[in-house]
Image (cartoon, rainbow over all chains, first blue to last red; front, side, top):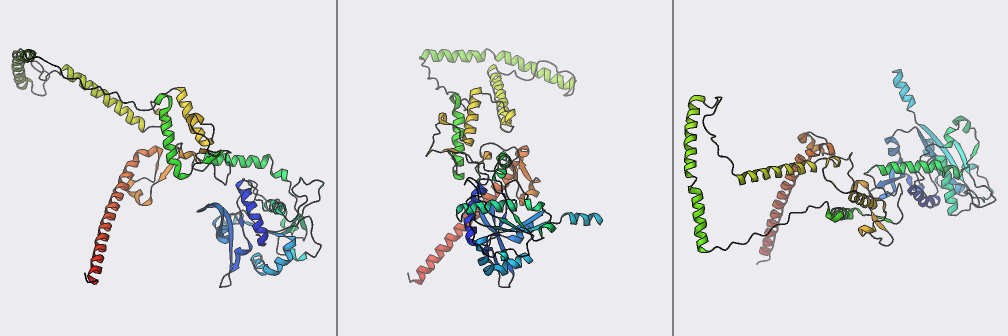
Amino acid sequence: MLPDEKLLSSLQPIMQEWIEEGLLGRFLLVGPKSIHEDENDSLVINADLWANGSQGFGFYSVNLFEQIAQYEFEVVRLISLRTLEKVQKFLRSRMHCWKRLLLQ
Amino acid sequence: MANARLNEMQQVTRFLKINLLVSPSKVVEQDYSMAFVKNWDMHVVASPEDRSTPWTADALVRTDERYSRFALMHLASTAGIWNGLGTSPFELIDRESARDGGIWLSRVFVNAILTDGLSRRVAAKVLDEIATATKDIYDSKIAVQVRGTRPIPPDEVDKWIDWMVGQTFSLEDAFLSFNPPQSQPAPGKLTWLEWEQIKNFLLFSWDKLKVIPWWMYVWARRLVGRKLTQTFQTDEGLAQVGISQNDPMDLRDQRLAYKLASIKEYAETAKSAMSTTDAQRSAKGTPRLWSNIRKLLFGMLDGSDLSEFRISESEGLVPVFSNTSQVITDPADAFQIPAEYRQELRIDQITWANIDQVDPLINITSEKLRAMKARQLEINSRLEQVNKDIDSSEARARGY
């Protein structure tokens, strides 16, 4: 999970580069715009997955829980990456969404 | 029941929540306690160290691209997403002791990632991917693009295969090509004088007339022999009386019959060779021919020098096939029969082992295609008629 849009946009090209070099394996990437509440106040979480889709290899948006439900996992690791500089600002803006996600 | 419960327990997924915080070398001193809320299993801080030289991944990190790479490096290590690793070092820590409130410091030893371990795993994975003939060698995900090569786009594949087939058949003075026998011109007409024509006619007539008594004698003998055989032996008897009832074959007819038999034998051999595997084929060649075919084939896959086949670099790049199955038959290749035809054909798939069963499938699909084309023609003609009706109605409406 990358709650900082600026950090996410700076990391995505490097992620792509490292994936193409074969350094990184598969993972689901959740950005700040991936989490939102729909009209019924339900939490909707999308995730970006590196895959070979209709437009060739690239990040494709998928439903996070649908993806997780499709397979059996031994371990699910939820990593939130934040930069200390942005912590204060982030916590003020989007804390409620992320807190709900963590408590679920 | 107990076993079922045990299995359910064994299948429990472990859920690990890690709060990873990265910071550049220079951080403004302030209260960051809000960043360490209690809902996480553990808090991990990745901070660069002061180093004596800038040649390490975590030295002199400022808020630039180096910082992004530094953050991603720690993210990949903490999440265990380095290719082939599959485990996070923080999984090995007992969850209860991790929740004591301590903050873990992340250290990544770049050499531990980018040494034999990862290289070997990535190389093994790439080789494994390449060995799968149906996957693209130059797949951007496995990234083994050979320098100086240009993967052939899918729409040009057939053109290049045709070119390769042409090259193969022209090797070694077109050894593998079919060389039809040279047709001889029809012989010119003879020129006879009048007396020669009369002489030849008389010779021909004499040749036929002189054997008439002989054939009369044969006819009489055969008649007597046939009557005696039917009377005393019947068709099921042990003996046949008299001379043979069948005419001996003419010498010229005999030669033609032998020739026809040998042509049929060649045709059968050629037909069976077309439906057998390479190893069973009877075609022969020279070592140089086969080495040239190998050179052409592998050159078109790995981009090695094919200047002798007049393949030259275009903008510093040579064309290569991106998929081995485009040029080499995959023995494990299988065509899955569409579900609607399975019951009718009584097979689920066509493989090289049952390739002879492809004909019924072709017949069915060709039949359907013909029916569809007929239907299309019918619809087109109806459409044409409707358009004509519309035109005439419009013309009437305008008062013409």
